Image (cartoon, rainbow, N blue to C red; front, side, top):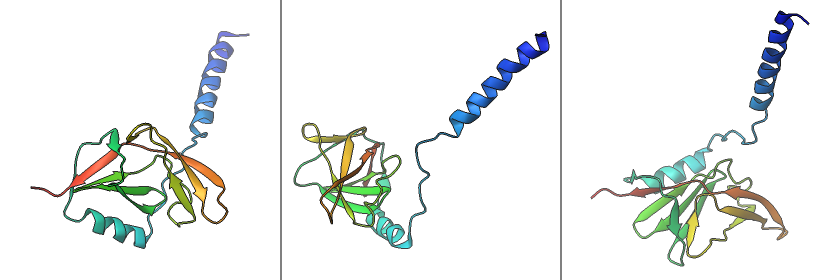
Length: 141
C-alpha cells in the first residue's frame, strides 16, 4: 500500500460517514401552515409580544389549551399565552383526529416532556411528541 492510498482511504471513509449521517435526520421538516391555522395563530397573538422562552409552565384547571395545527399548541394562563412548538410536530393533532394526553410530573408541563396522542375514533394510542420551550406572549403595558 502506498502513502497516497493510506491517506485517501481514511479521507474517503470520513466523507462517506459524514454524508450518511447527514442523510439520516429523524426530524421531519415543518410543514407549511394552512390558511386557517395561520389566521387562528395571528388572531391569538394579535397585540402581544413574545418574551424569553420558559422551560416549564404550570398546568392546572385554569390553563386553557388550543390546538392550532400539528406544529403549534397554545396554552392560555390568565393574561399570558404560551406558544408550544413541539420539535418534529404532533402528527394528526391539527386535523382533530387525535387528542394530546399530557402527563406532567407534579403541577408543571416542561420542555422535554413526552406526550401521547390518542386516536379519537378508536381510542387507541398513537404517536408521541416532545415539548420544546414555551414562548410566553403578553400584551404590553
